[in-house]
Image (cartoon, rainbow, N blue to C red; front, side, top):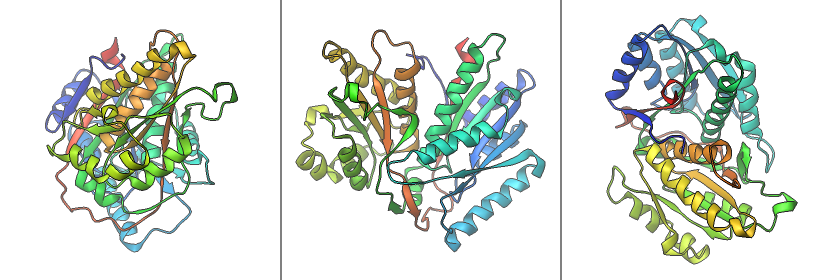
Length: 371
């Protein structure tokens, strides 16, 4: 498993990590962040400026073809104004990303991939930090997957250089719930490169295993994704341990009817993943997927689909588990891995607290520590 051991910092440890990391030698740092309304949008930028990083920003500007409400537009502009107060204008490069698209398309993910390719040369930087706090889920997962793969290929090339990749998020369940109001798209999409070969004719009879990683208020997404995949086995993943001791139980209770009455999930199939340590959650999800890979190998194989419909920290765990199965050191036949998700079509006005009780997490997912 690639991320065992791992490097994780949280809370006050994040500044300590960056001060130590930047003191070792001169480093050119790229911050990839979203131009959004979330109250946590600037936490990483403020921290990096505060520790004296030589910083450049790729600011992803999202366009879903619809006008923002006055409230969302005002919050977005306020965040942008604060960013301009932190850094000179010429240190900030705006990168447009069109999101959404026709039914059953991967347009958001593909547009994100193209935007990153056109934004600039990753090899110019020593460290790249992706702050997913103010990013739509599909954009965030695509950015991490694309950058991780491109940097792995760059490092493996003859004469290539190793660039560090970090992911940061200001985690707050209450802020996530307050930002999530809106209406969903009617179609399921997937992260580019992680389709699970769902429609491949040569493997259409392989068993399909679905791991929905659960959060609050996800009945509609669950129903859409279940119909899309038509899984043979469902293994819901519940956050535990959690900051709120009963959160996992409450999530299961909220979705009891759809899980047990509609989907006929076996209680023994419910899995647990650590909510506040994404690397531990990655290992738990990876091992669960691998158990099916090994068990069904005599039957030619299986397809695994993991849906990140929980917190942003657990979404990172999902991406790492799927990436490691697709590209990591896995003995024998690999899994076909998919990451299906349902995007938000139209956001409602956020109802986030002005000072949410968030905690900053920093994950170092590739680079010097692997040597």
